[in-house]
Length: 168
Image (cartoon, rainbow, N blue to C red):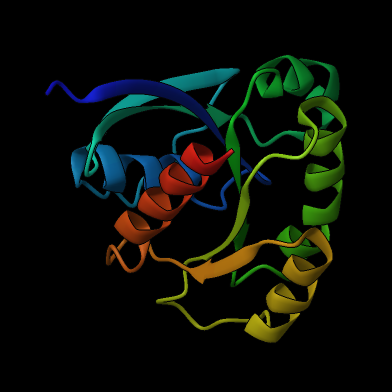
């Protein structure tokens, strides 16, 4: 019997330079580059997951990290089936801003699966992972510490969010 086909829209949100583009590159292409490339607007990447009885196509939206673009962001969030909220574990202000990203997202998307990613966990962390856990509890979501550089938890994060979008 042919597998059922699903297409789900996933957004990555967070301040500039938290590693959203690097996480996507690591996941989709298994590549990492230390060079920072600013995203303008949104870039969409595609990855197909071969799950037990379905083929799940993830359309992964890399949303620019400039908070001044709130009106533009809301158009990117429309129709999202899941999202990652990403902070840079070496920059506490990126965690502080996360609640604004979450509020803006949920205002547009309603209740969708969200996973918090504490990226750059291979470096000296200046954010306590327990603070991420506390924030995640307020949203009813989970947390993963990731590193686009080493690949730590990157595949696991996208797999988990992909599966959560199928439950809805």
